Image (cartoon, rainbow, N blue to C red):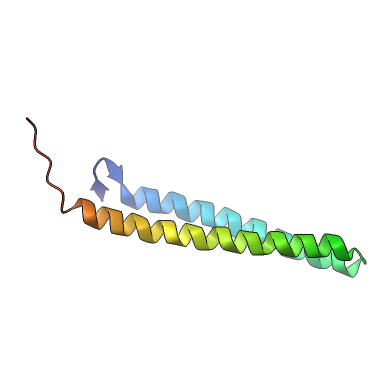
Length: 84
């Protein structure tokens, strides 16, 4: 659907693509954190677990952005534009 010149369906798909990418990076951070921990690199493991938590926050922010897109698109339907 196109609202105010923005194809909201494509916009949401692009946000899903960002989320998929971040999900993959989170998985790698998780895997590497455990590998570092297993190797005795406690500080590295701790830092990578912190990265994992930050990537969780990024994914939550993307979900918030998707909800905002839906709300903005719905609100834009109620706007009337007239040419002068």
